[in-house]
Image (cartoon, rainbow, N blue to C red; front, side, top):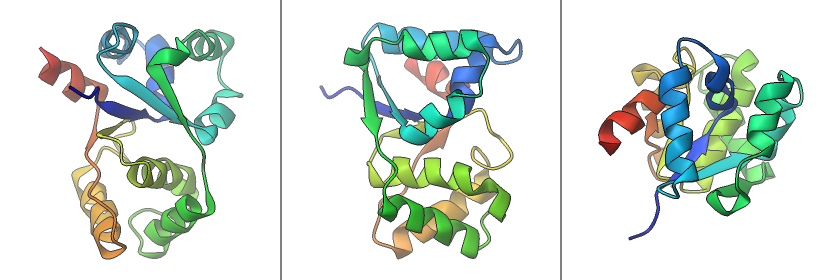
Length: 154
């Protein structure tokens, strides 16, 4: 059976050291370490992590590259992200969130995982992203929190 590919936005890496999200995030990364899922990340994630505290950067750097997959932000991704903003799914200040979503969509991951409940893991926003995905010939994207993933893994 093919391992599920989950796109981790930057909030998931920060969740390792956030009291509110730590337990679920650690369990999600345990699934990565056990080879149950593949952690997909982008150059945008790498860029955003440059400003993160050192321990979060180290957590990312120490991931086994056999359990991760890199996805590059392309012009196609940027164009789809711009369309999410033009169609007012979110405002212009959320363009990087849109890039994560477009990257996950175009790279056909099984799930995008995020702790961002305002702009990403939000039923109304998800409906907006997916309506634009469908209009442009892409698949719908399943967006979940790490908590949703680990609860369904049991």
